[in-house]
Image 1 (cartoon, rainbow, N blue to C red):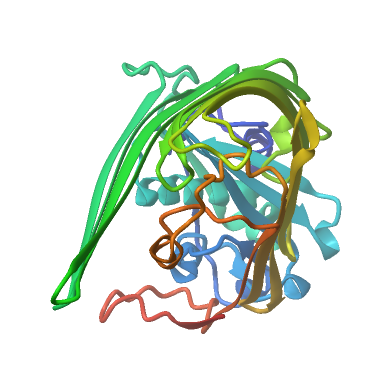
Image 2: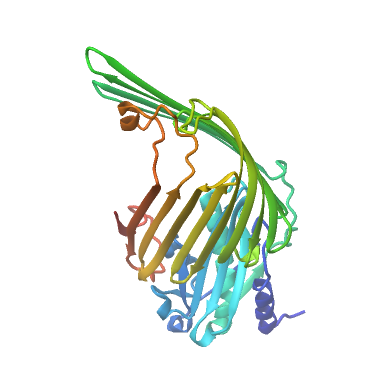
Length: 433
């Protein structure tokens, strides 16, 4: 049976409007195009928001589109966003039509399998980007130059994972530094085991660190040691597109915080105003937790306690959006002990990245904490050496931090030629303050 070109285009359109892909994108459908002379003017103009991607490589692989430098020039906006999960990275490709394609929207999804490299994910996403742009090229005179070839039967979406979605991470680090009169050793190790599925998330980690500093004053030698250990666990059950329930569990010991042993357990519930499926584009989460804390102190505290069991509750609000102009997010958390509401804390943090002009981005982040809950401060205070070496936590009413930076990438993004000689040839600089 002879298949008409209209049927082929219809099949491509139906394929690329599918709501999601499986966890491993099968590169079984290839598109081919031959762009005759003068046809470049008919190709859809695309602004690609994919930080860090090699635009020359993408452009050479998709000859039926012209990639432009700014959203104002574009007929199609294509944005790649992602979020980390222990089952892999979850990517979202959003296509938005402009000008003669106004109203033609499309969203595709892709999850990189555990252990996939950045290059593996890039190749799969580039193939998915190509399919997403075919629907726009099919509405131009270039449609007569597009062909579709189906190479193999589509793989099933189910995944047979011999690890049952468990992901483990082991790290160990040591930093040594020395001079004639000074030597320092810092060691840190951690182990995590995480399992994330659409219905349930389980995250666990154990960690430890020890820092040693030695000063040689000739007649005397001064040695300082600090250490800490901890365990944290989180279990979350997905209840619906807006609700989740779970619990936090943690233990810790820290010479810096005057904690010989601490144990905390807190059930929690979260409501997301927007569906969780839109979290790569926007989210507004409200998290409430209430729990119990058991603490044994290394030294008697300023409240004359050597150990105590307290109840604590907190409320956290997190808002985040990603748009063609950039990304922005803010997080506010308030907490207090139930036995004394004056023992409380408020934490505020924000981060914004703004696209200023054709590859120039302005980034700013900062945070503020109003501290009223330092129950573990030692009664004996801190010595001069403790203050200088930050061996003990000091009384404070607030904490702050701030970061500002500019990032600028420039050069041609329209070239369809890839030449690997002397590297990629890209140029850029950054200014950070």
